[in-house]
Length: 116
Image 1 (cartoon, rainbow, N blue to C red):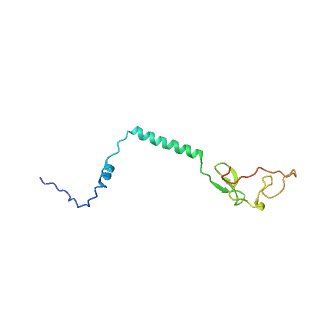
Image 2: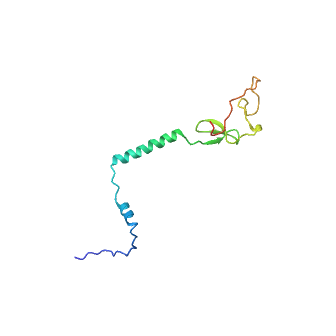
Image 3: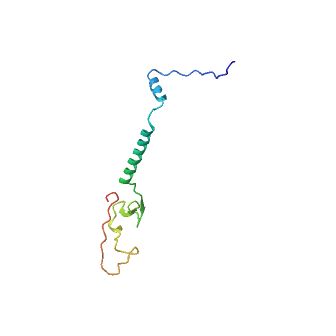
């Protein structure tokens, strides 16, 4: 009984230097499943540890451009060196009024971002 098959079209021949690479790529990679699971677990633990050691920082405007808030740590820092007229004293209210006790208090120095 005759069998109907498709004709194989002519394909270009590859050079002898490329043929062993293609043959190696076609072979299945034989590796135990526990080794694959251990490798995936190791990569996951290492990336978690790297993320905990150096977290990504996200900054939002706080009192104006030079002063920003780092949402990762919750601390304020300067994104650019402030001009003396732009420095916001932590002891004063936002509206610029002096504190009730009349003494000028100096707050902690605000660092540059990345120098904490």
